[in-house]
Amino acid sequence: MQQQEVQQKPSEPAQKMYVCGQGWDSLHATRKALYRQAEMGAVEWQGYAARITQVIESAGCLLIGWLYLAWLMCMLISVLVYLFLVVVIVVLFLGGFLLLSLGAGACLLLIGLLRSCHWLYTKAFTITYDCPNPHCYNREPLPIFICPVCQRQHRQLHPNTYGIWTHRCHCTTKLHTIERAGRYKLARYCPGCNNRLDHGIGEGTNIHLPLIGGPSAGKTLYMTSALNSLITTYNSTRQYHFSFLNRLQEANFTTTVQRLQHGQTPPKTPEDVPLAYTVKMDVPRGLVPKILYLYDAGGEAYNANERTDLQTYYKYVCGLIFIIDPCAITRFRHQHAQQINALTTSLRPCTSEIMQVHDRMMRMLEKSQGVRKRTRYPFPIAVVVTKVDALALEYTIGAQAARYLMSKDPTYTTEGDAIHDLVQVFLRNYGLSDLLRNLEYHFSHVRYFSCSSLGRLPSEINTSAFVPLRTLDPFLWLLSQGGIIKQAQREH
View (cartoon, one colour):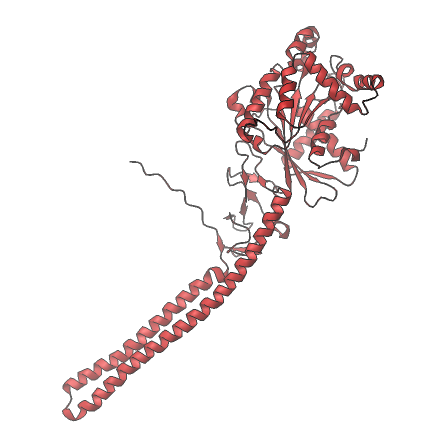
């Protein structure tokens, strides 16, 4: 019979507070030392009595009375010494016990108060430590903090019996237990996958936004264009501030934006299970920042169930961006086959069936969020038809078509409302009525958009900067649904 190995929880490499650790050890050590001293004193006087007994056995009769008296005195002193030291032990032990209990009680009360305040703080602002690393995506109550001197791992670095404001590592380094007091400076790792977590994770409210779409649907281009528009538009107001938590992601993002400014497109996303883009967003009058988690999984992730099941970040989603390449719509592709084939190199059409991508998205939502039979999912979904710069789609579901519709029907007050209806009509006319019906049935808030992540088709000859069309609108709508950004504050 094979014995199962029991995984023991690693011990915390910190010294407990005196009143919760060493104080009690010292009290017990003092009690034991005094008890030994009492025994030694009693035994010493008992030894004197034993010697007197030997003298009695060999002494004459004239001395026996005095010797018996001496023997009795030694035995009495032995008992008195023992009783005296026992009383001293009891008094000291009870006094030490009372003082340590009062000290420990006061510390535990303060710890409980701080922990309760921290719990209320994290609940009020929905602050969690969410791992952005592939094949993990765990939500942990506390990461592993690393001592900057000896590199020991501290798994309980918060107010507890190891310390209220600071913990003292075995190397005597003091480590702060509260983020704002200095804990944010420490390196940290995810307990689930042991990968490093970037500074800033756990400091604010997390906003998880996955991008869903088949291969070559344009998710990476859309995310880059939309995020760049968001940063440049709102940073100019001097009220918002954006910063990447991961320096490598920031460098890659900057490189991609520079490529787009020189008329070059970025390479295809290879990861089926992505490392989440993490962007810190400071908002006006916000007590804590917002941390955007953007998931750009390769389109192949929605071509097989086993790959879809790896997208476990769905359990945290605050909104969804469903990317539709019009070339992936079967009826549209058949009607425009000649034009699409002529533009294959620059258009890079997606061939995955829209309903297949939708079904796998719903499979992951049902697995992560549970099946909603009578209620809808509370988070919003933005349905974005991309590549409207091609095949004259700008005049069908774009700004040109929206302005024409607004001139014909005065009930449309904004271009976005007109595009919302135009996209629905477009999808319905090309055989995606089931998609519209399913989305409206499963989600409380659905909005339809059209955009172009480049503004024109890529060309080796034309190296001018790409100018995206309306990529920011879906992003703003999702963020405004959560009360993060007010669209009215957007500067055009």
